Length: 212
Image (cartoon, rainbow, N blue to C red; front, side, top):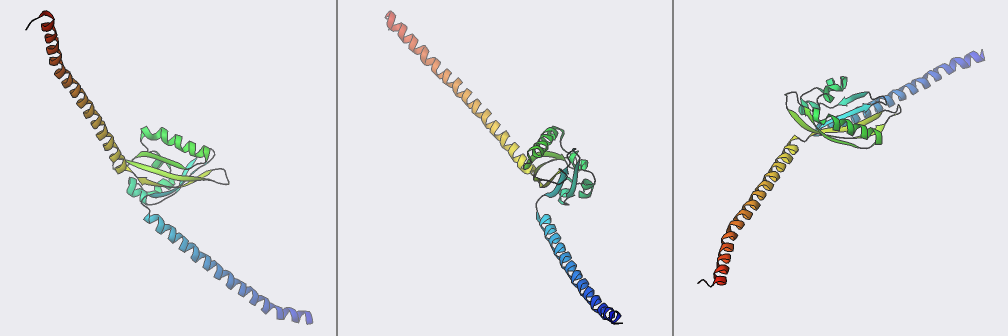
């Protein structure tokens, strides 16, 4: 009877202890859930205010490529949806200009091989049919499965590239003008010197033969 009585008295205490533990556990879960929500909101606010498309790109040891995250800003850059890229990386990779494909592949391979920061400029086909210059910058982090994960950003540098092209054209035109000016000066100088040489030669002949 005593043992049964002790067990009977202990049950409410045990139930109360378990109830208290459950309350504390739920409170901690709620706190961590709230912290996670706040962290996600801060990240989302940051992404939305970045003037570029934030992404996570991964490549396995066998060469399989995936875009596991792409911010919605990519729609402003290229007119395509982030969800489509996350479903299939080729949606964006296939838009690289044919003349820039080799440099892209080489840059990714070098970043993979040396585990170093990736930076690359290239042209991408916009949904409207035009090409836009984008600059990609990211840093790879090796994962437990030996794959690499690049956290990075794509920014539009079309205007900068256009300005550089215009500057190159202006410099080339300036060089051409300088060459024309140099040739013109040389020609004019030759034409001015020729009569003087003729007069000097005539004077020398007159003196030699006593002609006045």
